Length: 608
Image (cartoon, rainbow, N blue to C red; front, side, top):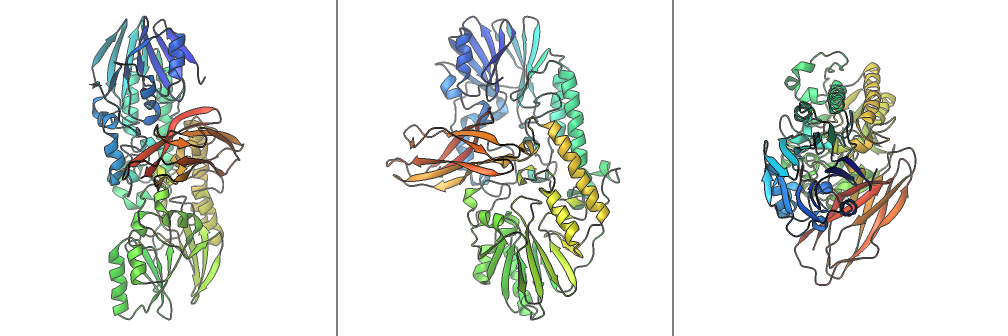
């Protein structure tokens, strides 16, 4: 389908590239709905169109807007949803705002933002009408994929077609999960599928229009919209039920889910148990105090933890801090570690995947990322053990709440304690943020974590946010594993990929480093990393889009990515000697994956 076009009527066409582009023709003139990349020009030439009068955008995401600079003619009107105007005209404000770079708890607006602003000619709101040739176009507010996305109802030659943005991909399918991350309470971080209700309301509104065709930005032209919409809404409701059935969020916010309380198929919430007397808990920090009064500390997200430790020292309960274990990179666990280490110099340990983030946080853009830089003295690998006073410590990669996460088994004083970071509560698994890379698959992600707990059989499990300990029965572990297996099948149907992790894992493609400081006249390396979630090799192609005066050794590169691995494609970029200083420059990367064009799907930041 890619690179071709579909004719719907004498005056209405759809160009297929990284996105679907609506083309409304009136003689040699055209009005476009969305833009995608410059390839739409090929279809316009075939149709004998010599001028684009206007482009109507459904929403602001870069993959369906980026080609406008190459496609627009002199005088082409740029028309956008009224509430999204600033995401077209003032994108520099987004990229320069540190709240959109660090401590990321919100997904709206998303960083799939234009690299450079475009001048908007007109804005439209719900109910507005546009006339072009024989076509009448009606604007409908349809939030869900973004907060203010719209759909366009096009009536021409007795054909009624809806261009629906990214509300739907095909019958029962959506393009991705992470765009629906929306906070029902608090920030977006805890809002897994939180925008499902707005999405469903928008889809039902479009269903009531009884259109002949539904044209999504990503996906297939849908000839039976009502069936496709009903199937998708039902599918998402089922996916949400399976998510909530073992969600740790039920422990943190039990009153927020009254409808689901004691629901059949949902795991009962486990009772807690008292922690051993040699443990202390402050904030997100657990402390082990040995018989000789030395302390082993896990995480430090606040200086208040440091103050509490000083109180314990003043009371004579602690003599010195000898080790610090970092469970994962989230800001509420690492923000105060530099101050902590200055106050209490000691050995630091972390899983190697955690270490790569906290030693170089600028290289990543992931949820709850902290700018705190932490030197890790010992990077642990799977099953690595060491002795600490009367305790035996064993480290594991523990890709639970986030992929960049460690677990620690502590054996001593006739107890087996497992410190799971933020991965479990008595209610189940902490997978409420889609940006945390919670992979599905046998012995992958939480499946791996649960199987490890089943093998180790700890007497106590600890969460960094919970004062008490807990455990799981074998039956509960099996119930959670069964739930995850069911999800894998459900989500495979939900997304247009051969493996559900492509729709679940926002960071299956990433630029490394995400942000780097560059100097005039320097040659720097940018790597585009692809995680192949498939069971077969996949071919990836990508090309960074540089400022016009910059030079790169090669424009586009391809590589075969082996199955179930992450591999990178590297580019060497020459920074001009006259590069302006103190600028944040967004480098979007255009890419395709196994023949599927993705457009400017990811970006990197250069700071001059």
